[in-house]
Length: 292
Ligand code: NDP
Figure 1 (cartoon, rainbow, N blue to C red):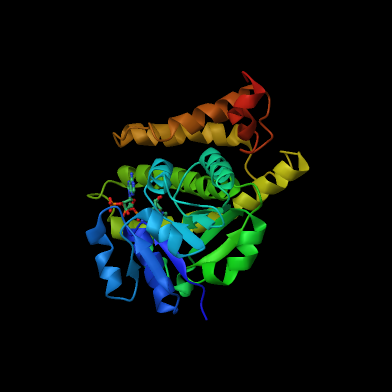
Figure 2 (figure 1 turned 135 degrees about the vertical axis):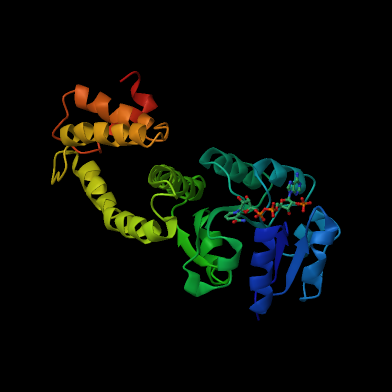
């Protein structure tokens, strides 16, 4: 028989998660602060608890998917957590994951933090490629891995409960830079000059072709040799930046999405690293190193 579990939070994501477990035959107890938002799941077979404490009492495995870490503290305040297996799928920082783990352990629960790399329509749809990073109690993960694999793929990234959030937020941060570049590119082409729908496939192909450069960066970081296999060096890239900026000027487009990164490239070049590519910039970002 399938492991019964509790889902706290039936927002867009919590509802998708609960629905996936129900569809796979797991008995599911749900709770949501605004009760009306949990009702649709009752029709699909879920038991709706009146309070979070009651929902926590119903099952050993408790999945939490609320807005942020503060709402997790609020919702679980007063719930008896001793002996529970708490899986927190609320997006947070690595520090929040670690302190929430200590908080749960003080209350006698095993704890696993998760970072969901999917949007709700990808939940319960294995072909979508959506998955969840997990970190924290390896025993909890091993015991419940089959249940956790029902809504999305699972990637366990270590016993440090901060590591799921670290992986999650690192990927989101990379995405942020990519979208910044895409935004500038669309601003530059001006829809009246180049049809965005004609330009889009070119952009996708280009970003896809450039993405494997990530492996080169990793190789340089691990070898410590930032000049290894450089194909376009920093001196050349900085010279090229002036063309990017002059084009923005000609097109009357603000360069503000580009200039912070370009300033870092110039700083690294000025330190005498023109024979590297971009990897050395990572050292400039390291605030532990003091003023660079
Ligand atoms: P929603 O805004 O749809 O739902 C938020 C949920 O949090 C609701 O259940 C809400 O309850 C509850 N909540 C907010 N504040 C409190 C509080 N103080 N006490 C108790 N409950 C509270 O968000 P999602 O479901 O989309 O997101 C949930 C988590 O999943 C977030 O951490 C999000 O980052 C993460 N996630 C979401 C993705 C997405 O694409 N949606 C993708 C990846 C991760 P109420 O109904 O009463 O307001």
